[in-house]
Length: 302
Length: 228
Image (cartoon, rainbow over all chains, first blue to last red; front, side, top):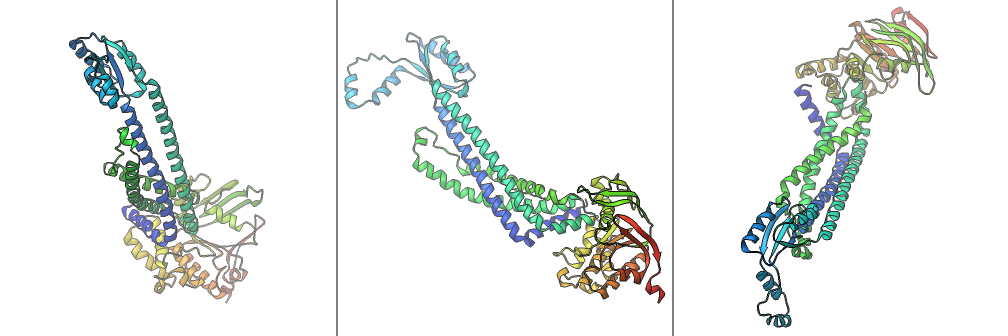
């Protein structure tokens, strides 16, 4: 195809948006709503995943060191712990720190009760260990409990299992919802453009009789669909920005639990502006083009 | 050239539309195809355009063996044809100029050629002054002349006119056929489907009468205008 012909077809696509403005507007609205539904679902899923990851990060393993261990042995144990692949970090927590922390957490009456213990501290030295992958938690704790100088290892494997299940179930649901929404979008958009194509079926018929190829007939429709998709994507992006910012501040102001869990940082829109914008543009253009391709195929067969 | 060799068409409904039809229309011929409704005229046209395939036999149009022609090559066949319909089938959102130029754009013709060829063809059908008008602003006769210009612009080897006078005044019908005759004199083969016997009698020429899917009559007769 010559460049001049391609330019002509692009021009046809653009002008037909205006000439069929009611149908173009209908396609735009449906695509906007569809993109918003998919976009907001993806953003919600990404943030929930982040919260779950944050909770997982808080799930520490406590390695209790044998009471008679020397300073050198404690140091050597740290190196051994860090050599385990799944270990993210290991922080030494001395028996003195543990005692002070315990006393600080007590009520005044309890503190008075414990002031006569004559410095006899029954608490052990420990390492607080964070793991990289919570799914390998059990294997990691087993390996740590065999290390030299380790008395015992305390880990909430049951909690880790619950978190893993929650994350897996959530991932499957999120993926299913997004795929279902994309399919629904494609069906709705192809039906909307089909109405537009049906209204111009005589035009398409004439094109076929004068020897137009399928490509020649489809290109203006695809360009039209792509442009409408891109415009809808820009509108969806702007709306998402307002909705996301509003929802994020509402959640962070009202659900202090996130702060308590240490996962107060939902993604700020500033951090995700580029991937969200690019994803919307690509999704808008691709869904617009694919939607029109599906709907024109029936009428374009020569 | 159009050649039907023992062609039969049976639709999926079981209706036999054509029965063992053999026919040859040579380059430069002008032929009227006549027959009552349901006789098989439309099936004949559909076969030439490769809208449908023959159940039996072979159809050759302008050197294309339609039995062997692949679907993606159909546009190549149609570019050698000009088609005029009873209901004009102009694109309502395009001007007269754009409707005619559109055919050349489809075949990737150079812009310069389009700019010179289209006004020439529009003037041939006597509509130079209406080049910027939209189809709805034209009379039936004028719309059919635009359709003729569109069929002609690509300099096709064969023009198929399917009841071209069916939707216009009788007086204008003669004008349209005169135009087709003029085009034929320049060497283009014309196949005109009609049921208007007055026109056929007036112009004469080769008459192919189809009846119940078979050729009942295929002869050349003198026209009334020749006798005058």
